[in-house]
Amino acid sequence: MIPPEWSRERILQTSSGYWLSCALHTAVELKLFTALGEEAMHAGQLAQALHTDTDATERLLTALAAAGLLKNEGQMYRNTESSLTYLSHRSPDYLGDMLQYHHLLMHSWQKLSDSVRTGEPVRQRSSHADNRTRDLFLRAMADNAAALAPQIAAILPLQNHRRMLDLGGGSGAYALRFCQTNPELTGDIFDLPSSRLMAETTIREAGMEERLQFVGGDYLTDPLPGNYDLIWMSHILHAESRENARALTYKAAHALKPGGLLVIQEFVLDSQRCGPLFPALFSLNMLLGTPEGRAYCDIELTDMMAQAGLNDLQRLEIEATASALYLGHRPKI
Picture (cartoon, rainbow, N blue to C red):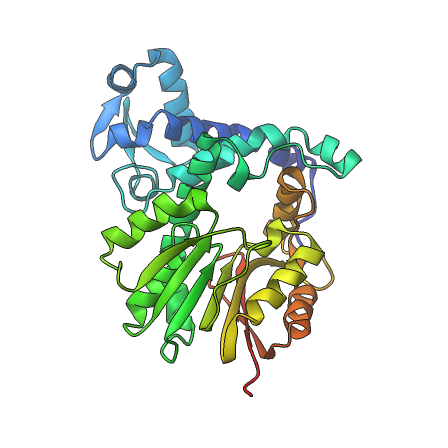
């Protein structure tokens, strides 16, 4: 579909769009939505609860209400159903960790022109960054995985598998859900040692110690445990160069049993590299934060899997997300 013409108004609105992002990020950082809860408050009450300036708090509340993130009831403000669900820290569907992580990325986006000129990143890779950035990144990825895992588990053929590898699995949220879907499935979560605490906490809280274990290592340089009939690779190829992504796909494919299934989840550009918009922007985000990471296009991913010796290649769409799943089997002997 041809997008609307870029009018003067649309250009200006896009240029200043970060104003609203910053207002949202600030409200999350201050725990404004959490403080409101299910109550209605006026600016003075909320400022007292948040230890903020009353006039400045009212301006922030006005902006959030104008954006539809709060309800304005005279001089009182109340959470909407959406803000209570996604922006209150008390909600199981809280998105605040991801939003705070997005806020940390804003500084590097201000330096995009430097990366475009040099082709070099301007920030450290999140999984290798300082403790605060790395922990926030891990929590954000864990929340996102936990939200998507039920939908993905429902469309994958998990029933016939017995042992899986969640490669670069972080918290292990996907492996946990897949095992809950298939009671006969066991597996390993393979990631950097810095993910161990979060993964083992996830495993322990779910009572899955006998079915899931964490294996620390670097998937680029360390050997992978073998003998799997299912390997799940979620959003790890985009952080790697084409050479490393191809090598990692081959490495994973050959850690499968004959007949085993490799599943890759990625933000995917179309083969003409004309979109969609989110993968295109995400590829710029990888430019800012990795030496050679990028969003890959459909043909590149299928070629990587074919060159790794996989067959019966299939693409599955994930409803209402910017991701797609790529499935391929290691040939049976």
